[in-house]
Length: 430
Image (cartoon, rainbow, N blue to C red; front, side, top):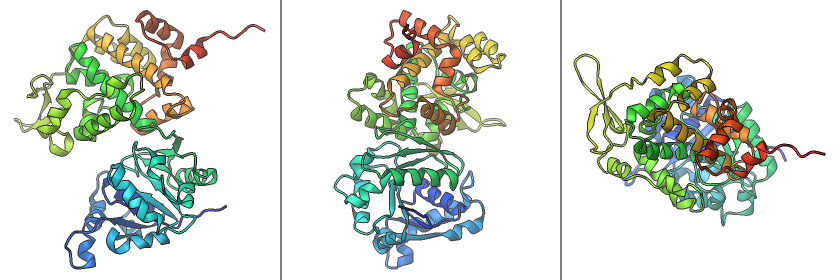
């Protein structure tokens, strides 16, 4: 069985779909970009309004989605009403419509009747059940079906989660992995078909647990961001700037979805969204796209003033930079695990908060093996490449000392996953 990708059909011209098409075009692949037609439009060109707008927007996207403006010529546009039958021309069909199970199933059922046998078919979902999306599709469809989770923006974010199903042909999976790695420059990790896969399952746990723990320790938003950014080897966005970037409404949706889909998760209640998240969405405080979320910039004298949300009142106030001595002390330490150790050993609210959030993240992540993946290296690669962490979760844990930290966890009354106990168990004497 041999495969070749000369033409790709991308279904969905939103931010992700259009930028996936752009990245494929950058790699020299001809693309057909389709989306819903404009209702009531009388001409084909008018019905292509959604894809035409997305096509034009690629020239102005930031960061740039295209290598050059000429690359755009490799992307042809159309709409689902007039041009869906043209998916029969594609060697690879990428479904990238709205992150809604029913919407994806509807378009995929139509594609199943139109694609040519042997064509690759994948979904760009960040967490929906890949196998269930293909239920009732043809045998050939399911054989050539898997999940391909691109990260945004696709040209610049190298990580790709590949999610095969039990029915995916191993040769198909291997070809897609090789093509994405060699032709598209992706770092491919294999994830199991479990809710939110590796990346968003673990990141969302970290964010939601942080929201709970900060309130127990009386910390403010800007204080948490000071503790969960570059100081611990993570990007400057830290926790709350990242949430604003993603969108508070998106965070709420993903948390509610996970809370529903993983009832047997030992930390199930961590995913229950706090009331203030719903109130923020109701009031339009949904992040960067609305100009206000956890943070808000307002015009001041000279430079804009940064305001931060008070989670008790949902009013904005001036952001204050934390002046804790342990932050200054840790900032002088170059080695990441040593820097973190300086912080988690501090007998202060900041130190206790960081120890509690990190130790819970270690334990939760270890307990996800083999649920989300069989390989701890895939988890560390995901955090480094998908979220720009300086080190992966297990790399940090090893740097802090697994035996020493587990002893402290046990002293705190925490349960230790069997996989960790097995690592620490002394080898049997022969």
